[in-house]
Length: 404
Image (tube, rainbow, N blue to C red):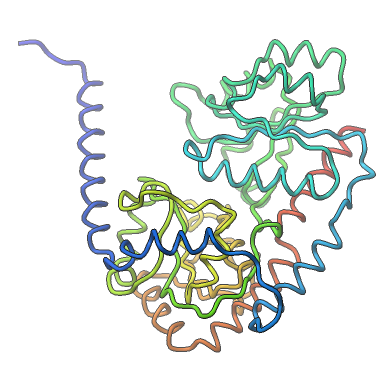
């Protein structure tokens, strides 16, 4: 009898586990109220057909949102144009490959552009050498993941750097990538003259977590570029009524399944809402980010859940936290460690357990006035300090000081 290597048994075990997880997800989706799926396409068609309305007849949230947004747009328009030496190129992955990466890098690029600094989105299908020559950047922001790095001509980077002031920044990540250890990746970065590392988690997290000390040992100070809401896309809009019990715009990646199984059944099984995002097999097409504000405007509750890392450490608030706040929808959120370091308790409905999450959901539906007050408070807080304009300004200032 042929004895198979243990690696095959490990692969078979992982495959069986994945099949089991997918089966559980299928059963979970089957429990979601059928009206949620039946109305998805018509709601999506409606959102695509919308245009922003005037303030006439707008509710309190829309009126206040318009005021706050107008102030932010005025303050930040071309605010950094004097930083004329900067030209920033940002690597943007396809949406179908990385919905999160597409959103955050696109929002960052759009915000830098609004602040008056020349910026170029480098798409995966672009000819790198041609874009490099045409745009002549001073900085390139990309990821340390091989899917990004393998699309860059590093020989061309080396040649370009000989005649230009040019710096490359990578995301700081301690998660394993195949056989490559963090030290392997940092060594690769040194050999390719990576100038700086940045990340989308809180500065406290980088300081506290042991794994990130490898960066500081090599002299790298990780720049924290937390998520935020893009004022160009996310703000309250007028609709006749909030007629969707909830809105949940999120992918269904397998690493999120356990959270969904535990926290959502009591809400999604008996209420007609709107669910959208990659991985939901009952959906034929997904809503682009340009129409998300219209979808949120019809929701009575915006659902939000975090990955386990955010619940265990003060690592990050997901992008959705800021987007829900900026769109003026009452937010029902779990209890990430960073939450009340960024928002007040008066701004969100936060639950520590699945049971409390379901109870708060029913409470929000029964107390619309209180829900509106929390949404208004959240709107004030996100526009005062948590927009992508604020994040872009801090990045520009950091690059400018380093560039000089």
